[in-house]
Length: 362
Image (cartoon, rainbow, N blue to C red):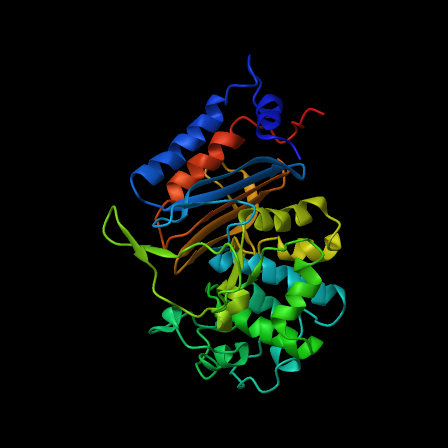
């Protein structure tokens, strides 16, 4: 693993390796401004290049009252919809093992799902092309202990928004239904399947289902904003029912491990992985979404795949830049902080100095 100053000297040439380069100082100034203005309680940053960690640091606090610092290797955050790429990887494993066919009907795996006017495939569900609705009422703030099957029951009787394949509607319930299909197809509880097929092989040892489980160490305190410059503890919610779409906990280091598994290209066959990280088309227009992965371009027109997550007590940004062979994983412990522009600037501070063909010095 490269040290922080090895990263500095190899990526940002300078006269003295003991001096933090201006590009990283700029990124840290943005983070410190967010902390000083109390827009976030804390943030964990992990950046890798060529499967090596080149910048990893925690800023602010995991618990403000106790002044517990953030450790990007250990502090556990709610990653919200960054759960979808993790679930997509589990689905890809089920495809690789021929337990699931992406173009098969959902009724092949969940025959008791109420019949709709149109058939629905797993591929359509994975790309948000199935016409399933998003949250309504207080579902996003659910406090009940619901199983995945009970989560599907929340929306299963509702009509489709459109004929599958004809439009795009982002939601987490698509992935709740996929996780139920994986359970039925494999005969293994969904959380166990993810653990066996993804978390253990990738050594993501600090990634867990978001349950009311106080035995998980190093969990951050979850916050919401109270006014412009104050935080309060976030409302209690139970996210297990939507585990696949927004219910995992993780560290910034573990999330980066997932991105590097795709860059390395050995964890999944290329012909399967590429289906997940290629944007789907509707009426000859890109949805900028693959299967469980956002597939888009940043403000400098650099291609990436990844995901953004926004949940109660957590906000996460995960990007994989294949041209630069880099992964960015940034996790915060507050609901909807509204820091999208600042995150772009933090990422730009590093990427603006790197060309796609440039390699780290040995």
